Amino acid sequence: MKYFRFLLIGVVFGVVLTKAEVISWYRIYEMFRFQSFHMYGVIGSAVVVGIGLVWLIKKYDIHPWYGEEMMLFDKQPSVPRYLYGGILFGLGWAMTGACPGPMFILLGYGVPVIAVVILSALLGTFVYGLVRDKIPH
Image 1: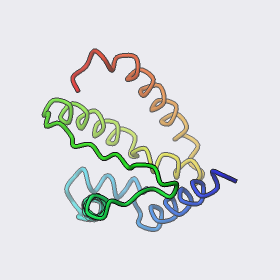
Image 2 (image 1 turned 180 degrees about the vertical axis):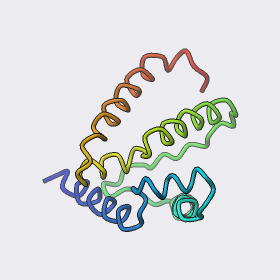
Image 3 (image 1 turned 30 degrees about the horizontal axis):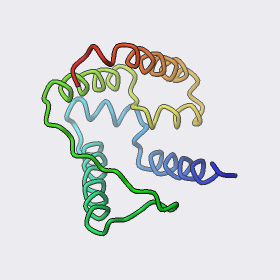
Image 4 (image 1 turned 90 degrees about the vertical axis):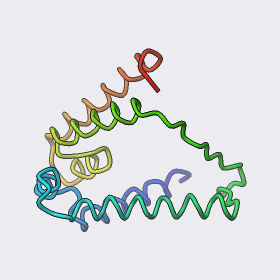
């Protein structure tokens, strides 16, 4: 019961992404060929909403439901970490046609081949954990 709200948020997130056609490989293909504004609009909207929410959290000192302190650390400016991470993320997204959120939505949508992508992502996360101390951050 404790995790029911997370399941509910995930279902709502999946419905929103499905209705917004974010899980469509055609839309992703359009984005990488710079043929449509659709995906850039969705991603840009998410960035603007995120910026607004972080600003509200900092301005009004908003706490989580259980009253813990919310820790928002400033990011250290570092070009290599964002450059290498962005390139790897973009390559994975371009090769599979899905970023982490839509991967699980596609599995629930009945695309079984995406299980290979999910397992590969989990393996990549495991390998990252092994080499994390040896790469720039």
